[in-house]
Image 1 (cartoon, rainbow, N blue to C red):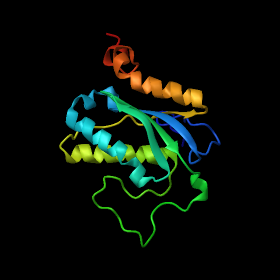
Image 2 (cartoon, one colour):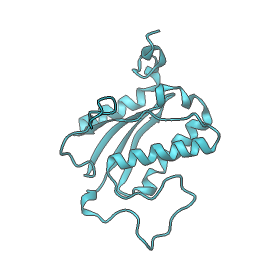
Image 3 (tube, rainbow, N blue to C red):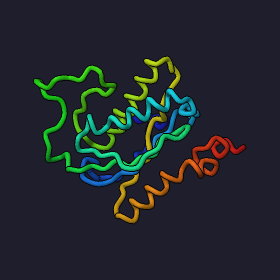
Image 4 (cartoon, rainbow, N blue to C red):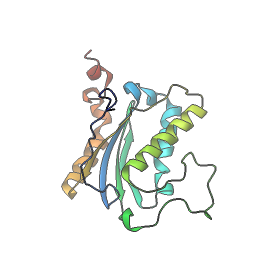
Length: 176
């Protein structure tokens, strides 16, 4: 039976393969846009997990990114089409137990984001931040040109100075 309360309309492009080469701009918000990353220890956890992404997904390169008080903006660049590669866990591959990331089964954008969010959550809760969480989804945009890439980089770099006007700022969220 279809449950309208739990049905979510996907914001992803239909029939688009999110494993293919390209640049993707993503925004991930904390649960209820709580200012979690004003706590320096939590911010460091998020930064460390973000910087760990290429170690777990060799086809992904980090471009410009920033951790804001209640969200993260970043550009992920996929360097090779994952549909063509044999990726993921192999029965004879060693597992890196020191990592907060579980072994990934494919390198699609959604998997990268989901495992990043999971790694931050696991590390935060292990560090005593039991209430830390993310909003359920994330925003993404496919970057289709060099001009768009440059504009997105500028947006990310300038984000801290425009924090008061940011749509994720508590004053904007709560109408104060």
